[in-house]
Length: 183
Image (cartoon, rainbow, N blue to C red; front, side):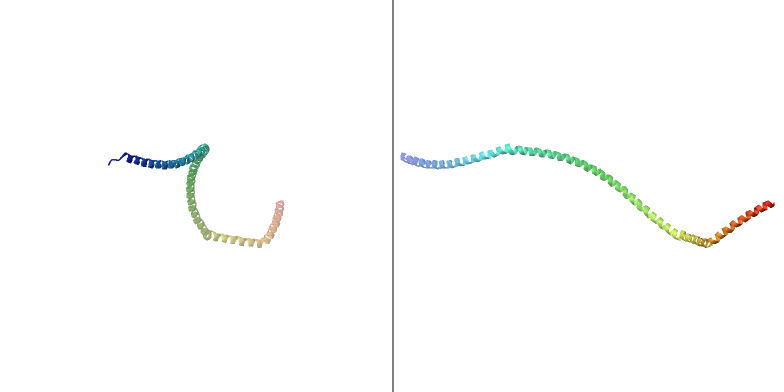
């Protein structure tokens, strides 16, 4: 089938009308897209402003804070090293103390053994004293006590005897003188 010029013209007019309508419709859609793009651009400018603020205000402050924290971390590392040294020293002292405690425990065991031996010796000594020493001591005490009371009772008699002896001495001395004169 062959189309006449008029048919082609009619088709062309239809296509132009539809293309025109499509163009109007596309223009309207493009206007909406342009409006949205402008909104996006405005938002992007806001984001750029915020990023600039972050870069100029917050970032330097954060970098300062980071430097401060790094300094504090270094200080803490030094403190930790000092503490580690202290811990090593304390561990050595603890080992020394453990050794001392072991020596002391040995000494305590030795002392306990010696104490047990001494308790046995004391018990033996007590038995010897009760059986072998105290009875004779009681006997000796009894003898001395009896003798003491006898002397106390006889003390007046002893004084009288002393006076008699003194008189006898004087008499003997006097008689010795007389005998010397006679002889």
